[in-house]
Image 1 (tube, helix red, strand yellow):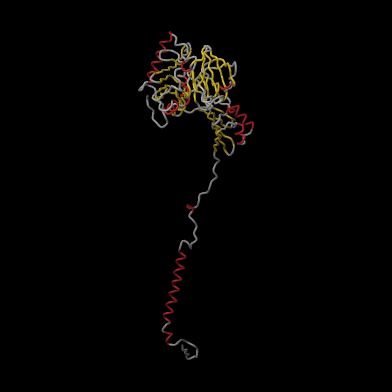
Image 2 (cartoon, rainbow, N blue to C red; image 1 turned 30 degrees about the vertical axis):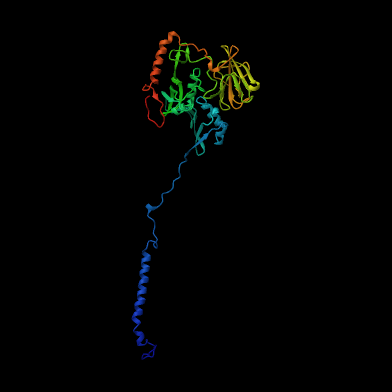
Length: 440
């Protein structure tokens, strides 16, 4: 590069070669300055770079304190729960618990809470407000804490009693098939009670037998909950038809056949229900333990240990205790010259002792395998006037029949029951929750 001097001797410029590049540098510098200005301008305008105040409509709403909510506490009761214990756990004072108990007593005694039932307690900010307790299929105890004090009342769910018909055919067992047809366990047991003098449900039920039952049924909120009194029934057992009609007359009430004869007899056909006969009455049976032939003066019913054994008839306990090969043994003397005996019991029923009175159907012991026995079963014997007889062959005496003066009234009841039991009759078939009402 070559420098030049002006007339005053001061350095004034470059050589001619550099002078030709001067405009290009100027353009580059100017362009960079302009680009910098543009970027700065855009940055200032961008939302991220700007500082703005949110619109008032976008401001979050002020959070208001929520009012306290009522809490529900459900207590499913075990056998050892008490009302006092539950309420004490919710910090309710002793005097207040006693006040609630006394105010509730006219509706329900809270000292008698039932196992597996539910007690519901409502609190507000930890303080008691209300108690609810369902003590029947449709009845509630309601206890409320008001400014005037504790108030107890009864509330009821919508309910009604209807007559319904349950019918079925035996495929496996009477108990299983009756439940499958819609009967509840109480109805099944009631039906076996009615026909207990004519049908041995432990040995005589066969595949193809049928039954039809007219009974009262409690409906709660439109759903069948529990069966009540059986008004009439029919059973076909081994091709023979049995009829039962409930009748209330001036001389008493009970179940009768269609001719007015009482179904009740002096002795039941069997002291066990729904079980099988494993050994019959015999003059010479081979004993499985003693390995020799000897008389078997009774009937053996095979059943699980603990199955209840019922007194075949009313009478006086002649013996109750241990009797050699019979194990735990009970003998009952009946009023018509009969004596029944029950052996191999796992234990003897409460209150069953020598001299005690027992009613027909009372549980006098439980199936076991005490004494000389190969497994759980009941050995059942019967004597008539001191002579051993086959229990399955006994024709016992019936109770009183319908009096002649009530025959006409009884015939009217029989006609109504028959009409309702007949397919297409006016009684309702049992309704289930998943079905629509239907007329039988």
